[in-house]
Image 1 (cartoon, rainbow, N blue to C red):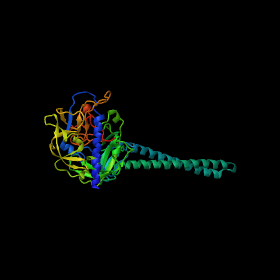
Image 2: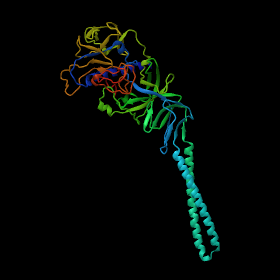
Image 3: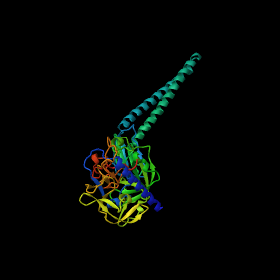
Image 4: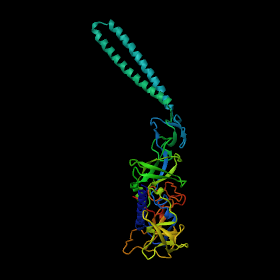
Length: 470
Protein backbone atom coordinates (compact mmCIF):
# COMPACT_ATOMS: atom_id res chain seq x y z
CA UNK A 1 0.00 0.00 0.00
CA UNK A 2 2.81 2.41 0.81
CA UNK A 3 4.49 1.69 -2.52
CA UNK A 4 1.20 2.24 -4.32
CA UNK A 5 0.81 5.56 -2.52
CA UNK A 6 4.31 6.58 -3.53
CA UNK A 7 3.58 5.71 -7.15
CA UNK A 8 0.43 7.82 -7.02
CA UNK A 9 2.43 10.65 -5.47
CA UNK A 10 4.99 10.41 -8.25
CA UNK A 11 2.27 10.48 -10.88
CA UNK A 12 0.67 13.50 -9.22
CA UNK A 13 3.93 15.42 -9.15
CA UNK A 14 4.72 14.51 -12.75
CA UNK A 15 1.25 15.57 -13.85
CA UNK A 16 1.59 18.86 -12.04
CA UNK A 17 4.95 19.44 -13.66
CA UNK A 18 3.40 18.76 -17.06
CA UNK A 19 0.69 21.29 -16.30
CA UNK A 20 3.43 23.75 -15.36
CA UNK A 21 5.10 23.25 -18.72
CA UNK A 22 1.82 23.80 -20.51
CA UNK A 23 1.24 26.99 -18.54
CA UNK A 24 4.76 28.12 -19.37
CA UNK A 25 4.07 27.57 -23.05
CA UNK A 26 0.51 28.84 -23.36
CA UNK A 27 -0.44 31.17 -20.52
CA UNK A 28 2.47 33.55 -20.71
CA UNK A 29 2.81 37.13 -19.70
CA UNK A 30 -0.56 38.86 -19.62
CA UNK A 31 1.07 42.14 -20.43
CA UNK A 32 2.19 40.72 -23.75
CA UNK A 33 5.20 43.01 -23.73
CA UNK A 34 8.63 42.33 -25.17
CA UNK A 35 10.68 43.56 -22.26
CA UNK A 36 13.96 42.14 -20.92
CA UNK A 37 14.10 38.35 -20.80
CA UNK A 38 15.19 37.01 -17.42
CA UNK A 39 15.33 33.41 -16.27
CA UNK A 40 13.51 32.45 -13.08
CA UNK A 41 15.41 29.93 -10.94
CA UNK A 42 14.56 28.01 -7.78
CA UNK A 43 16.82 26.54 -5.14
CA UNK A 44 17.52 22.83 -5.23
CA UNK A 45 16.34 22.55 -1.65
CA UNK A 46 12.96 23.95 -2.60
CA UNK A 47 12.65 21.74 -5.66
CA UNK A 48 13.44 18.69 -3.55
CA UNK A 49 10.48 19.51 -1.31
CA UNK A 50 7.91 19.27 -4.13
CA UNK A 51 5.23 16.74 -3.28
CA UNK A 52 6.19 16.61 0.39
CA UNK A 53 3.68 19.17 1.53
CA UNK A 54 5.82 22.14 0.62
CA UNK A 55 5.58 22.21 -3.15
CA UNK A 56 3.25 21.50 -6.01
CA UNK A 57 0.29 19.90 -4.25
CA UNK A 58 -3.06 21.64 -4.42
CA UNK A 59 -3.88 23.28 -1.12
CA UNK A 60 -7.30 24.39 0.02
CA UNK A 61 -8.35 26.91 2.64
CA UNK A 62 -10.17 25.50 5.67
CA UNK A 63 -11.46 26.37 9.11
CA UNK A 64 -12.03 24.19 12.15
CA UNK A 65 -15.66 23.93 13.17
CA UNK A 66 -17.93 21.73 15.26
CA UNK A 67 -19.50 18.56 13.95
CA UNK A 68 -22.85 20.03 15.01
CA UNK A 69 -24.10 23.58 14.58
CA UNK A 70 -27.32 24.86 16.13
CA UNK A 71 -29.03 27.62 14.17
CA UNK A 72 -31.34 30.14 15.82
CA UNK A 73 -33.91 31.74 13.53
CA UNK A 74 -35.35 35.12 14.44
CA UNK A 75 -39.14 35.32 14.71
CA UNK A 76 -40.00 37.77 11.94
CA UNK A 77 -43.00 38.99 13.94
CA UNK A 78 -40.71 40.06 16.76
CA UNK A 79 -38.04 42.72 17.17
CA UNK A 80 -34.75 41.89 18.85
CA UNK A 81 -34.26 44.20 21.80
CA UNK A 82 -30.81 43.18 23.01
CA UNK A 83 -28.07 40.72 22.04
CA UNK A 84 -26.46 39.27 25.14
CA UNK A 85 -23.48 37.41 23.62
CA UNK A 86 -20.74 38.10 21.08
CA UNK A 87 -19.08 36.09 18.32
CA UNK A 88 -16.47 33.72 19.73
CA UNK A 89 -18.02 33.65 23.22
CA UNK A 90 -18.39 30.26 24.89
CA UNK A 91 -21.90 29.43 26.07
CA UNK A 92 -23.57 26.56 27.90
CA UNK A 93 -27.06 25.17 27.62
CA UNK A 94 -29.39 27.75 29.18
CA UNK A 95 -27.14 30.77 28.56
CA UNK A 96 -29.28 33.79 27.51
CA UNK A 97 -28.45 34.73 23.92
CA UNK A 98 -30.76 37.64 23.12
CA UNK A 99 -34.11 39.15 24.12
CA UNK A 100 -37.13 40.28 22.13
CA UNK A 101 -38.86 43.61 22.65
CA UNK A 102 -42.08 42.90 24.60
CA UNK A 103 -43.51 46.43 24.68
CA UNK A 104 -45.85 45.78 21.76
CA UNK A 105 -46.85 42.41 23.21
CA UNK A 106 -47.77 44.11 26.50
CA UNK A 107 -49.90 46.66 24.67
CA UNK A 108 -51.57 43.99 22.54
CA UNK A 109 -52.21 41.89 25.64
CA UNK A 110 -53.99 44.72 27.43
CA UNK A 111 -56.17 45.36 24.38
CA UNK A 112 -56.94 41.65 23.95
CA UNK A 113 -57.99 41.31 27.58
CA UNK A 114 -60.35 44.28 27.18
CA UNK A 115 -61.78 42.71 24.02
CA UNK A 116 -62.36 39.42 25.82
CA UNK A 117 -64.09 41.18 28.69
CA UNK A 118 -66.35 42.99 26.22
CA UNK A 119 -67.23 39.73 24.43
CA UNK A 120 -68.07 38.01 27.72
CA UNK A 121 -70.31 40.93 28.68
CA UNK A 122 -72.09 40.67 25.34
CA UNK A 123 -72.62 36.95 25.87
CA UNK A 124 -74.03 37.61 29.34
CA UNK A 125 -76.44 40.23 27.94
CA UNK A 126 -77.57 37.88 25.18
CA UNK A 127 -78.21 35.07 27.66
CA UNK A 128 -80.32 37.46 29.78
CA UNK A 129 -82.28 38.45 26.66
CA UNK A 130 -82.91 34.80 25.84
CA UNK A 131 -84.17 34.18 29.39
CA UNK A 132 -86.58 37.12 29.06
CA UNK A 133 -87.85 35.83 25.72
CA UNK A 134 -88.43 32.40 27.24
CA UNK A 135 -90.59 33.96 29.98
CA UNK A 136 -92.57 36.05 27.50
CA UNK A 137 -93.08 33.05 25.25
CA UNK A 138 -94.78 31.15 28.05
CA UNK A 139 -97.27 33.97 28.51
CA UNK A 140 -97.92 34.53 24.80
CA UNK A 141 -100.89 33.07 22.92
CA UNK A 142 -100.51 30.28 20.41
CA UNK A 143 -100.29 32.62 17.43
CA UNK A 144 -97.19 34.39 18.91
CA UNK A 145 -95.31 31.25 19.95
CA UNK A 146 -93.57 30.87 16.58
CA UNK A 147 -92.32 34.47 16.63
CA UNK A 148 -90.77 34.06 20.08
CA UNK A 149 -89.18 30.78 19.06
CA UNK A 150 -87.49 32.43 16.05
CA UNK A 151 -86.16 35.31 18.19
CA UNK A 152 -84.79 32.91 20.78
CA UNK A 153 -82.98 30.84 18.10
CA UNK A 154 -81.42 33.97 16.58
CA UNK A 155 -80.14 35.04 20.01
CA UNK A 156 -78.74 31.59 20.70
CA UNK A 157 -76.91 31.64 17.33
CA UNK A 158 -75.36 35.00 18.20
CA UNK A 159 -74.29 33.63 21.59
CA UNK A 160 -72.50 30.70 19.94
CA UNK A 161 -70.70 33.12 17.61
CA UNK A 162 -69.61 35.28 20.54
CA UNK A 163 -68.44 32.21 22.44
CA UNK A 164 -66.28 31.30 19.43
CA UNK A 165 -64.91 34.87 19.39
CA UNK A 166 -64.11 34.57 23.08
CA UNK A 167 -62.21 31.31 22.53
CA UNK A 168 -60.18 32.86 19.69
CA UNK A 169 -59.40 35.91 21.80
CA UNK A 170 -58.29 33.69 24.68
CA UNK A 171 -55.87 31.86 22.36
CA UNK A 172 -54.50 35.24 21.27
CA UNK A 173 -54.02 36.23 24.90
CA UNK A 174 -52.26 32.95 25.69
CA UNK A 175 -49.90 33.48 22.74
CA UNK A 176 -49.10 37.02 23.85
CA UNK A 177 -48.40 35.85 27.38
CA UNK A 178 -46.13 33.11 25.99
CA UNK A 179 -44.22 35.66 23.91
CA UNK A 180 -43.77 37.88 26.94
CA UNK A 181 -42.65 35.02 29.16
CA UNK A 182 -40.27 33.67 26.49
CA UNK A 183 -38.78 36.99 25.46
CA UNK A 184 -35.29 35.72 26.33
CA UNK A 185 -33.88 33.06 23.98
CA UNK A 186 -31.38 30.69 25.59
CA UNK A 187 -28.85 28.27 24.14
CA UNK A 188 -29.87 24.65 23.78
CA UNK A 189 -26.28 23.34 23.60
CA UNK A 190 -22.80 23.89 24.99
CA UNK A 191 -20.65 25.58 22.39
CA UNK A 192 -19.21 28.74 20.89
CA UNK A 193 -21.10 31.56 19.17
CA UNK A 194 -20.13 31.22 15.51
CA UNK A 195 -22.10 34.05 13.92
CA UNK A 196 -24.62 36.80 14.62
CA UNK A 197 -26.65 38.33 11.82
CA UNK A 198 -28.37 41.45 13.12
CA UNK A 199 -30.19 43.88 10.81
CA UNK A 200 -28.70 42.17 7.73
CA UNK A 201 -25.19 42.94 8.96
CA UNK A 202 -23.48 39.62 9.56
CA UNK A 203 -20.70 39.25 12.10
CA UNK A 204 -19.04 35.84 12.07
CA UNK A 205 -15.91 33.75 11.70
CA UNK A 206 -15.98 30.95 9.19
CA UNK A 207 -18.68 30.79 6.57
CA UNK A 208 -22.02 30.91 8.32
CA UNK A 209 -25.58 30.63 7.06
CA UNK A 210 -28.37 33.19 7.09
CA UNK A 211 -29.61 32.28 10.56
CA UNK A 212 -29.88 35.06 13.10
CA UNK A 213 -27.37 33.28 15.29
CA UNK A 214 -25.41 30.02 15.06
CA UNK A 215 -23.77 28.08 17.88
CA UNK A 216 -21.03 25.50 17.24
CA UNK A 217 -21.33 22.59 19.63
CA UNK A 218 -18.37 21.81 21.85
CA UNK A 219 -16.93 18.36 21.21
CA UNK A 220 -15.80 16.58 18.06
CA UNK A 221 -14.36 18.89 15.44
CA UNK A 222 -14.24 18.78 11.67
CA UNK A 223 -12.74 20.93 8.91
CA UNK A 224 -14.83 23.02 6.55
CA UNK A 225 -12.83 23.71 3.40
CA UNK A 226 -13.49 25.64 0.20
CA UNK A 227 -12.92 24.46 -3.37
CA UNK A 228 -13.36 26.39 -6.60
CA UNK A 229 -15.43 25.07 -9.49
CA UNK A 230 -12.36 25.35 -11.71
CA UNK A 231 -10.59 22.54 -9.83
CA UNK A 232 -13.60 20.67 -8.45
CA UNK A 233 -12.40 17.51 -10.15
CA UNK A 234 -9.25 17.37 -8.04
CA UNK A 235 -11.22 16.39 -4.94
CA UNK A 236 -13.75 13.60 -4.43
CA UNK A 237 -15.73 12.37 -1.45
CA UNK A 238 -13.83 9.67 0.39
CA UNK A 239 -10.44 11.20 -0.44
CA UNK A 240 -7.77 11.10 2.25
CA UNK A 241 -6.36 14.52 3.08
CA UNK A 242 -3.64 16.04 5.23
CA UNK A 243 -4.49 19.09 7.32
CA UNK A 244 -1.66 21.57 7.94
CA UNK A 245 -1.40 24.18 10.66
CA UNK A 246 -0.70 27.66 9.35
CA UNK A 247 1.57 28.56 12.24
CA UNK A 248 3.46 25.30 12.84
CA UNK A 249 4.85 23.39 9.85
CA UNK A 250 5.30 20.30 11.99
CA UNK A 251 1.65 20.13 13.08
CA UNK A 252 -0.49 17.99 10.77
CA UNK A 253 -3.66 15.95 11.03
CA UNK A 254 -5.25 13.37 8.76
CA UNK A 255 -8.85 13.09 7.71
CA UNK A 256 -11.36 12.03 5.07
CA UNK A 257 -13.50 14.18 2.78
CA UNK A 258 -17.04 13.23 3.79
CA UNK A 259 -19.06 15.70 1.74
CA UNK A 260 -18.69 18.21 -1.08
CA UNK A 261 -21.69 20.53 -0.91
CA UNK A 262 -22.40 21.36 -4.53
CA UNK A 263 -25.81 22.81 -3.69
CA UNK A 264 -24.56 25.80 -1.69
CA UNK A 265 -22.01 28.27 -2.94
CA UNK A 266 -19.65 30.18 -0.69
CA UNK A 267 -19.88 33.95 -0.88
CA UNK A 268 -16.44 35.03 -2.08
CA UNK A 269 -15.75 38.12 -4.14
CA UNK A 270 -12.22 36.94 -4.97
CA UNK A 271 -12.48 33.51 -6.54
CA UNK A 272 -9.31 33.89 -8.61
CA UNK A 273 -7.24 30.82 -9.36
CA UNK A 274 -3.77 30.42 -10.85
CA UNK A 275 -3.82 30.99 -14.58
CA UNK A 276 -7.33 32.46 -14.59
CA UNK A 277 -8.38 35.83 -15.91
CA UNK A 278 -10.46 38.28 -13.95
CA UNK A 279 -13.44 37.75 -16.26
CA UNK A 280 -13.33 34.01 -15.82
CA UNK A 281 -12.97 34.28 -12.07
CA UNK A 282 -15.82 36.75 -11.80
CA UNK A 283 -18.06 33.97 -13.06
CA UNK A 284 -16.43 31.33 -10.90
CA UNK A 285 -18.08 29.87 -7.80
CA UNK A 286 -16.65 28.18 -4.72
CA UNK A 287 -18.23 25.39 -2.71
CA UNK A 288 -17.74 24.07 0.82
CA UNK A 289 -16.49 20.59 1.59
CA UNK A 290 -16.15 18.82 4.93
CA UNK A 291 -13.40 16.65 6.42
CA UNK A 292 -13.78 14.25 9.34
CA UNK A 293 -10.56 13.97 11.35
CA UNK A 294 -8.86 10.90 12.75
CA UNK A 295 -8.09 13.04 15.79
CA UNK A 296 -8.67 16.71 16.54
CA UNK A 297 -6.17 16.97 19.38
CA UNK A 298 -4.34 20.28 19.21
CA UNK A 299 -6.93 22.02 17.03
CA UNK A 300 -9.04 24.94 18.21
CA UNK A 301 -12.55 25.96 17.19
CA UNK A 302 -12.34 28.57 14.46
CA UNK A 303 -8.66 27.87 13.70
CA UNK A 304 -7.71 28.44 10.06
CA UNK A 305 -5.81 25.64 8.32
CA UNK A 306 -5.06 24.44 4.83
CA UNK A 307 -5.54 21.00 3.32
CA UNK A 308 -3.95 18.89 0.61
CA UNK A 309 -4.62 15.47 -0.86
CA UNK A 310 -2.84 12.61 0.93
CA UNK A 311 -0.87 10.64 -1.66
CA UNK A 312 1.38 9.12 0.96
CA UNK A 313 3.86 11.97 0.83
CA UNK A 314 4.13 12.04 4.61
CA UNK A 315 5.47 8.45 4.51
CA UNK A 316 8.20 9.23 1.99
CA UNK A 317 11.48 9.36 3.88
CA UNK A 318 13.69 12.34 3.16
CA UNK A 319 16.71 11.27 1.15
CA UNK A 320 20.21 12.26 2.07
CA UNK A 321 22.13 14.32 -0.43
CA UNK A 322 20.83 16.01 -3.56
CA UNK A 323 18.08 14.37 -5.62
CA UNK A 324 16.47 15.95 -8.69
CA UNK A 325 13.56 14.97 -10.88
CA UNK A 326 14.78 13.74 -14.23
CA UNK A 327 13.02 16.52 -16.17
CA UNK A 328 15.31 19.09 -14.50
CA UNK A 329 18.45 17.46 -15.93
CA UNK A 330 19.53 17.89 -19.55
CA UNK A 331 20.91 14.57 -20.76
CA UNK A 332 20.84 15.28 -24.50
CA UNK A 333 24.61 15.70 -24.71
CA UNK A 334 27.57 13.56 -23.82
CA UNK A 335 27.49 14.63 -20.19
CA UNK A 336 24.43 15.52 -18.09
CA UNK A 337 24.14 19.11 -16.95
CA UNK A 338 21.69 21.56 -15.41
CA UNK A 339 21.04 25.22 -16.07
CA UNK A 340 22.14 26.95 -12.87
CA UNK A 341 22.67 30.40 -11.44
CA UNK A 342 26.41 31.09 -11.21
CA UNK A 343 26.04 33.01 -7.96
CA UNK A 344 26.37 36.34 -9.76
CA UNK A 345 22.91 36.55 -11.28
CA UNK A 346 23.88 34.89 -14.55
CA UNK A 347 22.99 31.56 -16.12
CA UNK A 348 25.54 28.82 -16.72
CA UNK A 349 25.67 25.20 -17.80
CA UNK A 350 26.63 23.18 -14.75
CA UNK A 351 27.94 19.67 -15.34
CA UNK A 352 26.69 17.19 -12.77
CA UNK A 353 27.60 13.64 -11.85
CA UNK A 354 24.68 11.26 -11.51
CA UNK A 355 24.51 8.58 -8.86
CA UNK A 356 21.65 6.23 -8.08
CA UNK A 357 18.23 6.54 -9.73
CA UNK A 358 14.91 6.24 -7.90
CA UNK A 359 12.78 4.62 -10.60
CA UNK A 360 9.61 4.97 -8.55
CA UNK A 361 9.89 8.75 -8.21
CA UNK A 362 11.85 9.32 -11.40
CA UNK A 363 14.71 11.06 -9.57
CA UNK A 364 18.51 11.01 -9.89
CA UNK A 365 21.02 11.44 -7.11
CA UNK A 366 23.49 14.25 -7.85
CA UNK A 367 26.81 13.24 -6.38
CA UNK A 368 28.88 16.15 -7.72
CA UNK A 369 28.29 19.58 -9.19
CA UNK A 370 25.25 20.76 -7.25
CA UNK A 371 24.37 21.67 -3.68
CA UNK A 372 20.99 22.26 -2.06
CA UNK A 373 21.61 26.01 -1.85
CA UNK A 374 22.25 26.29 -5.60
CA UNK A 375 19.46 27.63 -7.80
CA UNK A 376 18.48 26.09 -11.14
CA UNK A 377 15.80 26.23 -13.83
CA UNK A 378 14.52 23.53 -16.12
CA UNK A 379 16.04 22.98 -19.55
CA UNK A 380 14.19 24.62 -22.43
CA UNK A 381 14.86 26.07 -25.85
CA UNK A 382 16.34 29.56 -25.89
CA UNK A 383 18.51 29.28 -22.78
CA UNK A 384 22.03 30.62 -23.17
CA UNK A 385 24.92 31.03 -20.79
CA UNK A 386 25.21 34.55 -19.43
CA UNK A 387 21.47 35.25 -19.40
CA UNK A 388 20.25 37.24 -16.42
CA UNK A 389 18.70 35.15 -13.61
CA UNK A 390 16.49 35.95 -10.67
CA UNK A 391 15.44 33.85 -7.70
CA UNK A 392 11.72 33.17 -7.94
CA UNK A 393 9.62 34.23 -4.97
CA UNK A 394 6.48 32.44 -6.05
CA UNK A 395 7.71 29.23 -7.68
CA UNK A 396 8.01 30.41 -11.29
CA UNK A 397 10.64 28.78 -13.49
CA UNK A 398 11.83 29.43 -17.01
CA UNK A 399 12.19 32.52 -19.15
CA UNK A 400 10.05 35.58 -18.54
CA UNK A 401 10.02 36.65 -22.18
CA UNK A 402 11.30 33.89 -24.48
CA UNK A 403 11.72 34.36 -28.18
CA UNK A 404 8.79 32.76 -30.04
CA UNK A 405 9.53 29.51 -31.81
CA UNK A 406 9.66 29.54 -35.62
CA UNK A 407 6.15 29.80 -37.01
CA UNK A 408 4.63 30.53 -33.62
CA UNK A 409 1.90 33.17 -33.80
CA UNK A 410 2.23 35.80 -31.11
CA UNK A 411 -0.26 38.30 -32.53
CA UNK A 412 -2.96 38.93 -30.00
CA UNK A 413 -1.48 36.24 -27.83
CA UNK A 414 0.47 36.34 -24.61
CA UNK A 415 4.18 35.81 -24.31
CA UNK A 416 5.58 33.56 -21.67
CA UNK A 417 6.64 34.72 -18.25
CA UNK A 418 7.59 31.45 -16.68
CA UNK A 419 5.58 28.66 -15.16
CA UNK A 420 4.78 27.91 -11.57
CA UNK A 421 6.26 24.79 -10.09
CA UNK A 422 5.14 25.43 -6.54
CA UNK A 423 4.66 28.59 -4.50
CA UNK A 424 6.99 29.50 -1.73
CA UNK A 425 4.27 28.58 0.70
CA UNK A 426 3.65 25.34 -1.14
CA UNK A 427 0.37 26.24 -2.78
CA UNK A 428 -0.59 26.10 -6.41
CA UNK A 429 -4.13 26.23 -7.66
CA UNK A 430 -7.40 25.50 -5.98
CA UNK A 431 -8.38 27.75 -3.11
CA UNK A 432 -4.88 29.17 -3.06
CA UNK A 433 -3.21 30.06 0.20
CA UNK A 434 -0.96 32.90 -0.93
CA UNK A 435 1.95 34.43 0.89
CA UNK A 436 5.38 33.27 1.85
CA UNK A 437 4.16 32.11 5.23
CA UNK A 438 1.43 29.94 3.76
CA UNK A 439 -1.29 32.17 5.13
CA UNK A 440 -4.31 33.32 3.22
CA UNK A 441 -6.07 36.59 3.63
CA UNK A 442 -8.78 35.30 1.35
CA UNK A 443 -7.82 37.71 -1.44
CA UNK A 444 -6.30 35.35 -3.98
CA UNK A 445 -6.21 37.96 -6.74
CA UNK A 446 -3.56 37.83 -9.46
CA UNK A 447 -1.22 40.81 -9.40
CA UNK A 448 -0.52 42.72 -12.57
CA UNK A 449 2.61 42.13 -14.53
CA UNK A 450 3.47 38.82 -12.90
CA UNK A 451 4.14 40.28 -9.46
CA UNK A 452 5.32 37.65 -7.03
CA UNK A 453 2.95 36.29 -4.46
CA UNK A 454 3.67 36.18 -0.80
CA UNK A 455 4.89 39.61 0.15
CA UNK A 456 3.80 38.93 3.67
CA UNK A 457 0.45 40.66 3.40
CA UNK A 458 -1.53 40.71 0.17
CA UNK A 459 -1.82 37.19 -1.19
CA UNK A 460 -1.62 38.10 -4.85
CA UNK A 461 -0.22 35.41 -7.14
CA UNK A 462 1.67 36.57 -10.19
CA UNK A 463 0.27 36.31 -13.65
CA UNK A 464 2.77 33.59 -14.42
CA UNK A 465 1.18 31.28 -11.90
CA UNK A 466 -0.86 28.44 -13.23
CA UNK A 467 -4.20 26.88 -12.64
CA UNK A 468 -3.17 23.57 -11.16
CA UNK A 469 -6.31 21.67 -12.15
CA UNK A 470 -9.53 22.74 -13.82
